[in-house]
Image (cartoon, rainbow, N blue to C red; front, side, top):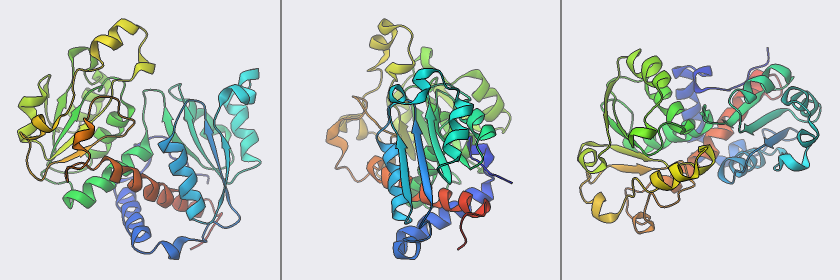
Length: 310
């Protein structure tokens, strides 16, 4: 039966751990995986702008020996003529062995997965979730901190619309003894459905605050996010909130020497470029890890679909 990944909960904790193991093996022995997807095609359907995620998927498929069919502008696709997401998915299934899809509307990837005859990977759907970014985040934390147990993880910035934050909280809820510190303006607090259905349901230790300086000394991981202009209906609200948190070297002085700084990118002003050379800055390493985890996920779904063996 066709398997897709639309939400991080589509993967069990054990599957995530195995994907992490595969990604680490790819890092250590890339040649072993260089031709596994020869003759297979990935279609990247991106209905909203992306640099890292789209190119990461494409680089992942190329490094597995496969090919890529890319749609990067909805205005030049049949969507501009009114074609439904469902029909688009059915059509692309005729050309490709697997689809990575980004769409501004929550639930669009789920609709596509139901219509497609090949696996669909959600590459971000509106403010809902972004499972492959979460896989990149988990690999980064595991490689940098050695594991998850006992960590205090700070999530800072736009927690209301931040789909990467929602997916990461969902994933971390599977691991033991993790404390969350949620840092945001009141207007951008984590949605109740995530707080109630994930944090409270799983009895996670959690503190909410508006004060980054108070939180910094307590953290093992700081996950910064940008305030997303594209999610706001009111430009005045965006301008008022966009620079709520700016991480500078002076503020980072308050943090533990082994704390890591993460960011799903793109950044705007929320992390000073002066921090880029600090050994605690891991956001560009996150980018690399995203490629390796997407390679691992593509392999898993193609194998389960019977398209490849290895």
